[in-house]
Length: 225
Image (cartoon, rainbow, N blue to C red; front, side):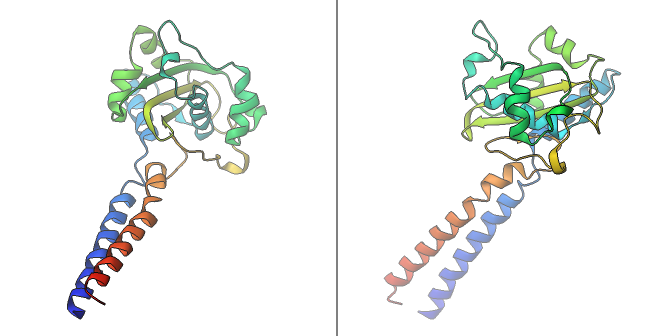
């Protein structure tokens, strides 16, 4: 009986440890950073300069996405809309902790929305590079920095991809109060050293513990322990 008890306990511990390790591996996986990498690789391959990844600008890109409130129909097409320019100073910057006086001009915007999640490089080539206007924005010489964001609606479909460009200076534009952006979920943004995908997933661990412990208690009860 004791052997069976310890065997069950060992299985539960192994299950929890394996799931925790799997989730932890996702911590460094930030699709917004990967999107910027794909963008800069494409620019340099076409003899354009690589752009500075500005976390303040990227956080604002995430706020830009949130302004659509999960409505894909307002992205592109005849019903396309975009947030008012005034929202950058009135809403987006305060929500990110960006000093309003350091907001720079937005020299380009790329925005896409899909019902299913795709890898960042696929999103870049298949969703954001949708026409000649998008290509023109990508290779513009007016840009010096970039911020990217990726978010689902309440953590699920549809998925939004947003890239904002600016011609600001890396150390003096979109400056974060205290040097740290305010993190808001759901969503990821580039340049923030943020544990993006893993942060939400790690909340699953207490649930896994509860399930495992419950299963253990039930099993022990069945064995009369």
